[in-house]
Length: 283
Ligand SMILES: [Zn+2]
Figure 1 (cartoon, rainbow, N blue to C red):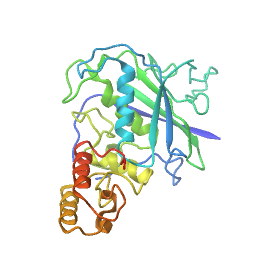
Figure 2 (figure 1 turned 60 degrees about the horizontal axis):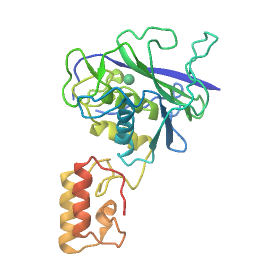
Figure 3 (figure 1 turned 180 degrees about the horizontal axis):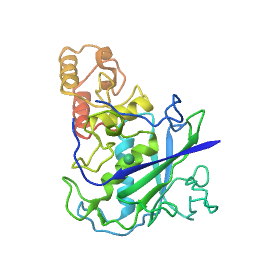
Figure 4 (figure 1 turned 90 degrees about the vertical axis):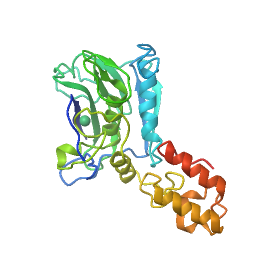
């Protein structure tokens, strides 16, 4: 038995300054999640559309980049993105309103309606399809409103156009199981807030969310407290460990080569990891 949850990304408005929220399979149920932690997306947005203001050349490139941002957090979760081949409409033809489509099939595609219903002021909509009792994801189509004027750009919002990259970043957050903090009593900077904002990249709350849903003990290089980011305190800890040649137990995630010591090259790797928002570690 499966259930669906439609979630949306609204236009415009502010974002203020406490914690992520997951989509639960039913009241009191588990957070919906991918098991194993891999979500295979098929993009039908296309290999054209650009060049865009952010320098990308195609819609598909922006799907890949948005998915890579989530994967790079280093949680026990990753997206895989492949160009779609044969498109199957996820909308049930019987008019039942079911928007899931075949199990295992998660297309990202343009459409003027959400299975016949108008989008209103919604730019895109991810539909999470999952087992009600287990919370295990089955698939998650992403409907992108083809009647909206879309481009791809970094930085503050612009008049008349919308940034496909941050829209996708938000929708893919739903695909992995996150909900809207601002509609659940939270006031926090997050891509996962329900309204489009000047934020164009994942925020600390977004990263904490995915790390909570898909915990990993090997997240960012040098992320001593396993919070999903490398903080100045983490870096100072690594400097002290490197200077004294002490063992790495105070910050095991900084010991890339697993020799029990923090060395200068590992300190530098942690700086790189912090500057690039913590990619998954490579020894
Ligand atoms: Zn949303």
